[in-house]
Image (tube, rainbow, N blue to C red; front, top):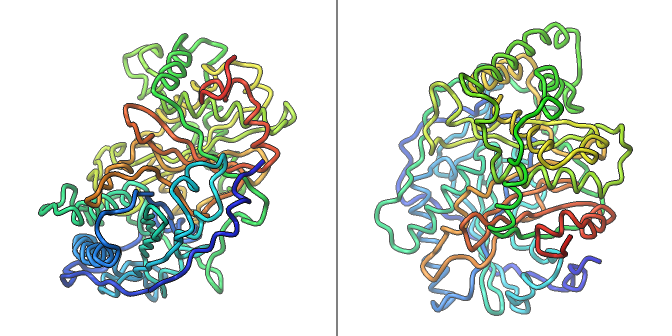
Length: 492
């Protein structure tokens, strides 16, 4: 049963709300939203934050230091202190006008760090540690692009950042968070200055039509959900990876270019039309060429399934089993890939903005459960490898022909969406009194089947999965021997 209910009586009290401005005026012109940014206008703000032990610095002094550090950090990231604007042609820009961000001080002095970390489920009070709840990124036209909320607890402090998802992806989000922490602990020269260039293939003349009143999220957000953190040790991840790589792609476990084609075009979020039907042969050729190119002169056995792909395969199988789906039901596992390094003319690793594309991988429920972990991991591995420069560029061109919102949700009851990444430097956020003891997120962009991957605090390949499921599915996952074996919950 969810443990979060026992903490529902906790209240987070607003103490103050102030605007913080960059300590230097912006010298950057308007930044055009890209084909990777624009679809995110229908998504809610990213809400992530760190739970820290209580600072030895008095709270009033700490708040003053955080506000001063935020002002300095914003001078390196002036886009975050700006607003969205739409020109007469329908193109959306970030205007770096130094309009400022919100800084919110809140208090929850009856909440202890153990109240956050102790329960089986993530307690509901965590959702009150963030501002801009349910705010859609399009609202950045008339609301700040970012807000910082500092919540004082009985024996700790939570620092939560809410950031417009049409302005940043996870890479850019954590780059700012790390910079904010660097400045606060006294670093004189930031380690990763952002790149604001807007001269890549991602910049387009396409216009995304906005309905009157602005876009709405593509999921309901009203269904009952449970949210739990599952931790995977380095040893468990190594076991999973070894199991996934124990035999390389045999004839019965492989995936054809036609199956890859099906992943891209059979998505429920993208409707078929006569125009898209005419494009299918082109899609197939691109995917076939991408697979051939990724193989090169090597054999299939030369490609190793990654630790993360192995973990995703486990999750896909076990959640599908917990959902008790009909064997003929098509299931979808969707994950985002970073395009920065995949382009032939790669973007800078610190390119500021969204530079991601979503990859759906599909399989029948019966196939997932009748075959082994290795087979499932191979599907994910091949699909990610096929997403090269050519497929990225085709996806951009396809979106330009039919601009659309980013598909978030579990539209058919059989979808899983993986967000975030264990590679993000979440625990590098030392503001001067130590690293966070945990990473948590708000209620934004959550639905049945939304998973977020965080690095474990111990590092060394450990992973925490933030899993959001219907209560019935979560109960099934908690009783799944295969899944719980790798979390250390039970033995097989």
